[in-house]
Image 1: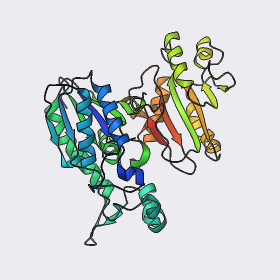
Image 2 (image 1 turned 60 degrees about the horizontal axis):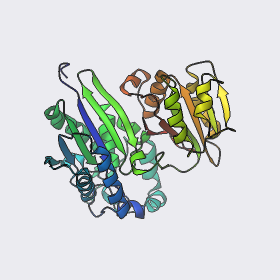
Image 3 (image 1 turned 45 degrees about the horizontal axis):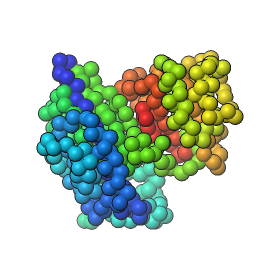
Image 4 (image 1 turned 180 degrees about the vertical axis):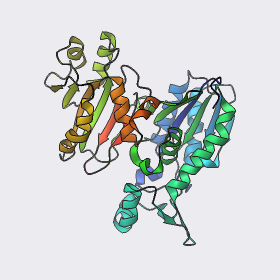
Length: 363
């Protein structure tokens, strides 16, 4: 990629909640699901949030639930300038063939071996078509995502593009952009109407935001893998001003915090930050890389609990970048591809007996 090109900003939005979401059914590339009233409402909230952003083009999946979401977003933006809307078949959801329409519970109980492969080894996961020929859904999805970037991105140098698609598709788009492999497909979360932002420039790709759900009135993204284990809220220590601490303290007031990890204790800004959590347990460590110990050891303890434990971890930005990238399945040196912003939270969930999931970055 040439270094003299202005950056391109890509805004990714997963479709709003659908009828199949409510019914707990696999949707895949089927087109029977439509938005629920909640899905329509949250799509409009996303549109209100994006009103101040000049969007140059809109891409959508050909599936109805995504096209409905794009329509509600643009309607709420109330922008009279026509935006070209391109329907791309490469943006359709993962093809789950014989699973489509089945409930999650049915698949877990009646397709256990295949389900375990889907969860633990997604790059090996295969399903039959109706004619008994097999395909590899995750690998195929990643090939489509890479094809979309190759064919579509060069047309929008220096532009802002809105993509309305699906949870699995957005996983693959973000992962291929960051050079992450299909084997780590389940390592990041995409909530209904969650917003993610990628920036492509001559210097490479940066993930500026992942799964922002505060615009749809979710303080933190909803937990998908059960309300157990450990949830870490990561906050960069850098540039924590008194004003930023007060604002963040109000946000944290609505969250049940069980403990706080930080490089230093007793600082006045820390008291301000935790003002609504006077009885919280605090752990202090002089090492900047203390998160690695918690990632490897502390999570084993909390991951065995029957309840959800939520901790706030305050540490320098490079430590957060390294931990997030490792959790996503990348190498530590790739952490610079993640833009960590002062005063904003990133979230990792360590479910019980389950791989860790990056729920959000910069929310």
